[in-house]
Length: 211
Ligand SMILES: NC(=O)c1ccc[n+]([C@@H]2O[C@H](COP(=O)([O-])OP(=O)(O)OC[C@H]3O[C@@H](n4cnc5c(N)ncnc54)[C@H](OP(=O)(O)O)[C@@H]3O)[C@@H](O)[C@H]2O)c1
Image (cartoon, rainbow, N blue to C red; front, side):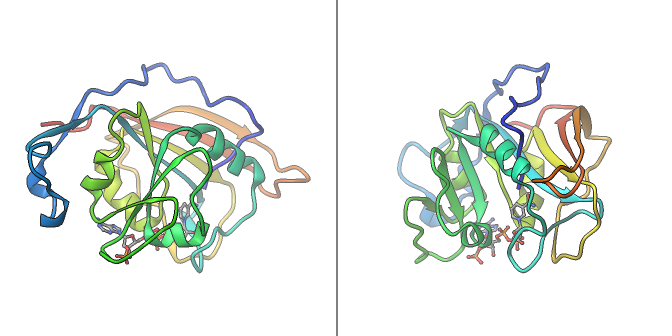
């Protein structure tokens, strides 16, 4: 995941307000549909991904983070506080609890899954729909979720950790035809953060396809 020195998020030139995303109710599984409101709904939310990745794209090992970077955790907290955070079931289990001050959405195919203090949903669409009313919502991992979220996201907050590590979860390749770097703040290792790292923001060059 990703963190800061308590500094404010990087300045982005574009406004934070997204154009509405229409999610087709037909893509929702039977159990996610309810009468009326799902005929066609819109989510006036900008979806972003937030991750910390090594030079070899590793983001995790044994369902945990491969490094300890308190600055990255602070950065993650500053960006996501007050917002919806969307996560795969494995990432939730690695966190172990909902993160305070945020609405935690846990995605699983297990219909019986319970996660105290979280909203549990069973599809990506259902997860995105819960974010209605939030100006920005964050896909916070892991690898499985990032792969699916890429096409729905307009911004990526990526902490590029300047190391190569072993792992079993990777951040997907970025198609630089579609994504451009708009901000990069480099930090040197210090006594609390043992690795060099860059806080990078990528923005999608063209709007997410909306129907
Ligand atoms: N460095 C970072 O920024 C960062 C951030 C987050 C996580 N991580 C790391 O990433 C690793 C975990 O990633 P992961 O890919 O193994 O797992 P994950 O993406 O966290 O979770 C995968 C699970 O989410 C559920 N899921 C995913 N897509 C779904 C869909 N469309 N509909 C319903 N359920 C869906 C499934 O749960 P069920 O099996 O229950 O159906 C699936 O097994 C860990 O090592 C973690 O530490 C790193």
